[in-house]
Length: 260
Image (tube, rainbow, N blue to C red; front, side, top):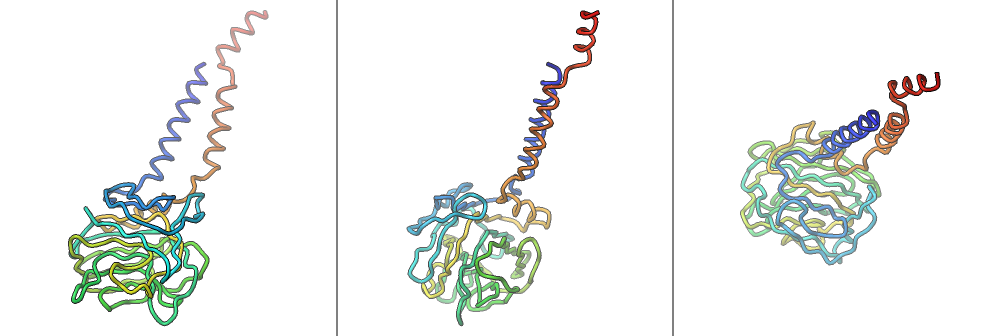
């Protein structure tokens, strides 16, 4: 009985440890999983989406964007950082095609109105990642189509942005940023921009933070969407079984005395 209790305690401790390993970093204000819904799983910025969902990379679903003829996810921005405030926007994306001679966008935040410096976009130019704001942009490395990537963009200071791909920083640049209040947060394009700039892609697990995450926090954010390693649970099960079936020494001693 003692060993069984020990096994149960061990199971609880390991489960808590694993749960903490996948917990999202502090500062999360919106979370769009794409798992069959455009609702905000953390905040109140529920989106609207009339497109389809497809199988994602981690056993859940993802938003499917078909480009200029397809729908985008359009959500509010309550609680999201504005002005030049620090922020992190992360997501998983599978670019389905290379764009042509113009940018197309996976994620947008802000209003693309005349004279606005708030329409910030994360997308692609042909086979390269691109960050764009109000007509200015910088490129941030290349990618391959039909492959899932973890992408994170951070505003780390006044008009300073960094792009991370699969946990590695690929570029840092300067774009004038001044996100207005009551802006839109969009997936598959940028609010108010021509549909020619909509992307053909699968996107899921989109997170918005009101801070610039550290390198270790980015790693946790990336891991949060990955399937939990099955070997952890296999090892836990074998350990629990072993402890539960192992007789306590005092029990064996009492049995020996009765036989004597």
